[in-house]
Length: 365
Image 1 (cartoon, rainbow, N blue to C red):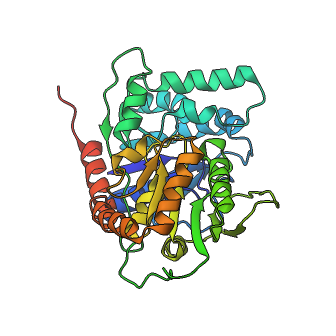
Image 2: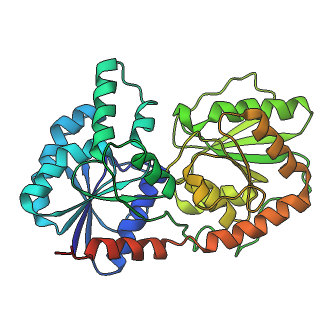
Image 3: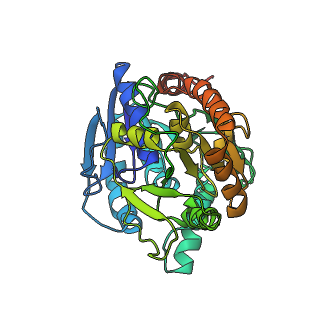
């Protein structure tokens, strides 16, 4: 089967890593898989891409301007594929017509409820923001095959569409060959200065400011810790923060796994996520997790079973949970053991197998 993923970019990030794992997995099953991306938007950071990358169009820095120019050009090439998978709502509008014209199977793999994400983008024009949110909102109602990465994503879409929308769930997974406890973790449980790891992104909904507030509360209680921010972004922090801050920019999954294993606690503070892979990867590495209820995380995370979960945008509650994990080894150990069991249930092999069945399924006449 000849399959094309159409992506806004191939920059370092969880969403792209998930897409690449699915593409690589389908290729390993014998399919001819390509990832199509507008020209100039492929990251120099290695992303373990084992399939063909096709750059189309012109190098335009603005995603929204690029959409107007490059996605119609991409659409013209889609007649050669048996199935096309799009991962962002704006792309749907610029490619759906061409797949309909060529008779190509079209799948929209929604990784979150995009109108929420668009609320956090830097679009200066209120009209353009309204237009893109409108396009995102109604993209789910086009006559296409909808796949989502979690029940939360599916419900968010269903609750915000006029007509009934059917969807199938294909969860994200964990690469257990990399994210695991097979090697000795490098953390020292007796060290006085604990290491708190977060995956920081510049988008406001990722909740990095909430983490700063939560850790300020802990610092006022005289806890000794270092905040480690793992990020591909250029994040600037207040020099007056009452604790140490260290940045790391891993170039591959192995370095990401090492950061998890070094940490005493992994913290996720997003307001909303379609799935949220980092806490699951941390669980696979044997690292205790303090997380916020970001929606999609419910697919695998259970409060007081494999993590400590607090409501989103409540740094005081987040601080309390981090404090428990830093001071109560019995609780942390129990959550770690259950987290390891949870991670074993979410493999990319299972995800790829389910997606493959959806792609090759014949329509009922």
